[in-house]
Image (cartoon, rainbow, N blue to C red; front, top):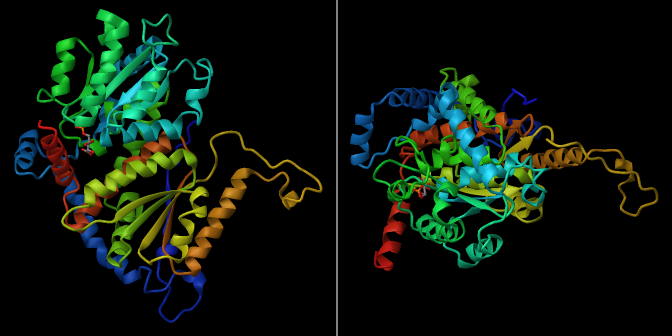
Amino acid sequence: MPTKATLRLDISNTLARPKDSKDKKLGISPRHGISRAQLDSIKPALETAVEQIKIQRRFTAEQLAKLRDRGEDLDLGFLDQPKCWLDNGRALAKLKRQADQLARLADKFIVAGIGGSSLGARTLFQALAHPYHNELPRRARRNRPRIYFEADSVDNDSLAGLLDLLPKRKPANVSQAFAINVISKSGRTLETAAVFRILAQRARQIYGANYAKYIVATTGGSSSALRQIAEAQGMPTLEVPDAVGGRYSVFTAVGLLPAAVAGIDIDQLLAGAADMTRKCLSKSLKNNPAAQYAAIHHLLYRKGKTVRVMSVWSKALENLGFWYDQLLAESLGKKGRGPTPITSVNTRDLHSRGQQHQQGSRDKVITNIVLKNPTRPQLTLPSVKNSPDGLQKLAGAGLHQLLTAALKGTNLAYRQDDRPCIDLILPSLSPYSLGALMQMLMIATVIEGNLLGVNPFGQPGVEAYKKLTKKNLGL
Ligand code: PA5
């Protein structure tokens, strides 16, 4: 049963202890921590930021188009996506039917997209599918296909390697067949378009006239070149709404179709995100985790903590870290401002980045993403008498217990050295809790943009590289 309780934010290790106290249990030093007065002083700006989102959310398509023409994108459409899908049972059922149909057709499913058209789906797949999904026999995958991600570069060897896995002749059965979901909102991204050409050529080669039914294009409106190609060739299409930017698009067909193909419970995912939207637009800042998250991180940024480490305590969340890297970097990295995101997977990276986080420059805030319980059956340490490994005292202890001890130890070490860290605690990794977490992080990023004085939508810097690359290629 999916658990409904969502996330909890523990900010105690960012708070400054009273100036006259040396008791390290009462927080970190005032120089590195946040004081009560600072917390109080940010409240009005926070309330204004939440209020502004509520007003802008009601802007008409005409108003939004005018802003876009002035280069002031306002893509708040992501706020309404979860509820829209849940309220529109027909559209959701259609998307799920389409996913089931693709799963029946082919045992390999390639998601071709880059940036916001890839990272959300990758996050959902890594977090919610079996950790070795692609290596399981089809039956153990509940007849869902193996999932591959491509077009997130123009890397010859990576794509050539994938092509080695695909048939060169008409497949004899479903286990040899492959299908493609090409995703590009603009429909003009070089990487996606180039890789898709090559994949589509293989599809044409093996399926002949029937090839279009093995491809689904998820893309923007009529100005998208991908839409024009798909419609001309009879490929099914799904829409990326105009008012939803790439890195905010995980709860549109961009993330939902690949997730449904992989067998993920997308209703629960959307329910978590929809419930979180309500919470994060609430006036009471006390019950608004996005506002709290944004406020604490913003205050620490102003104190010189310009590097933000998303420290995930589950290997299944590494892609969540990469997704957040993009969300934060593209949304806030403007006008010479914005925190630098880094992902760290623990305990793995305690053996690499850990040294720097503990004793390096004091420019970091560590945000731990913690799962209270593992998702799979708990493993315990067997009893091995007279073993020199020194672990016999732990015989019968759960592996998760070891992880929790490492987290507590790491946090205490940070606190003792006045290094701020935050815990974001999920009861476990379910579609509901992940939906809630991702939506919370997107809303927090918008609020933070407001506090920082930058527009969290649009990515003019990325556009500059795209244009110059095309120029280099004579396009
Ligand atoms: O957040 C964004 O908008 C970008 O990262 C895009 O997702 C990325 O550049 C890919 O664009 P498109 O979906 O148009 O191919």
